[in-house]
Length: 174
Image 1 (cartoon, rainbow, N blue to C red):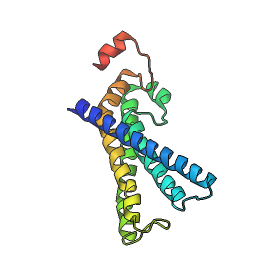
Image 2 (tube, one colour):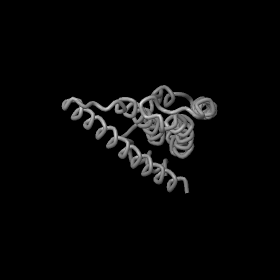
Image 3 (cartoon, rainbow, N blue to C red):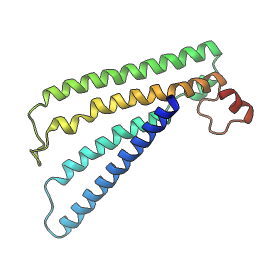
């Protein structure tokens, strides 16, 4: 069940990131061509910046799913088992608590922005563009939770962050 959820979230985040990267590329290329012809659009930089923010939030959730964020795996791997497990659970709890707080504060920001629109494209609501804050935070928490069982198994085996583990360790992990 968790593996299926991880795969589904992985595919979803990859698809969203691909669409966003293609969109920002198209917008920037369009803007360069238009600027060269003397008809620079007034909206492209604001839209490109918003898309870049969305790429950042979705990308951070994708990195969380892959456990690709910076950490201290080497230090955790050499800890005694009880201390290692305590460190893993404490770190996980702190990360999840931070992103739950970020989601909650993001929802408060959305209430403040009610009725406001973008400067260059006023018909696009700021609530829509800033919805990535709580959405991205919720996706990050989901990614952490879906990837935690494998991460915990690696912590128990003392192979956190190691890309190439021996067959004996692979058997322990399965």
